[in-house]
Every structure is written in structure tokens, then in C-alpha cells.
Length: 111
Image (tube, helix red, strand yellow):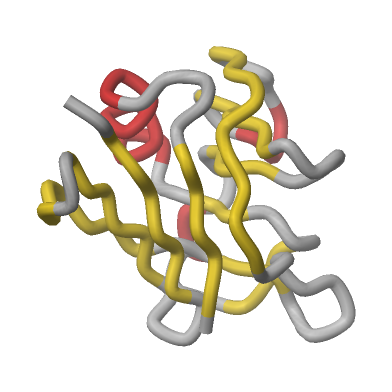
């Protein structure tokens, strides 16, 4: 069972796939104009529970330094263009996602 993640920046939506079929979709907050979320193909390189502060209940770092998928201490930011480039999720959603995916899961970010 192979998972992959796609982040559509225009739709502000993260979609989880298993063996090419959509499993779940989540609303996200994305990078603002002067600190955009990087476009490209990456993978989950690290995971840390309860990193605290702005990162909420879970941090999943990408293989590009300083960028990741994480929870938030500001749930009103979900669905908006507000981050410093990271992909923000509701804390409950990022916990669901983190239980399903592992280090090495591919992440595609596009418009």
C-alpha cells in the first residue's frame, strides 16, 4: 500500500492517495506571496509530534530545509495564503495524515 500526497496551492487543498486512488482531502493554509510554498516534487523526510508553538500537534518536514506540513496554533489561517511557505493543517487533520504516511512518502506541490 503506497501513499502519496498532492498539494494544490490554488485550491488550498492537500489530497492523500493510496496506490493512485484518492483516500482523503484536507483544507490547508499555504505560503504568502513573499514567502511562497515551493513548487515541485519532494518527500517527507522527518516527523515530530508536538513540536509546539506555530507548528501545532505535528511537524512533517520535507526534504527541502525549513519547509513542511504541520498543524497550527491559528486554525483561522487554514484555507488562506498566510504561511512562511509551509503547508498548515488543522491539528486533527495533520494527526490523521501523520498516522497514515511514513518518512519517504512522496509529496507533489503544484498550482
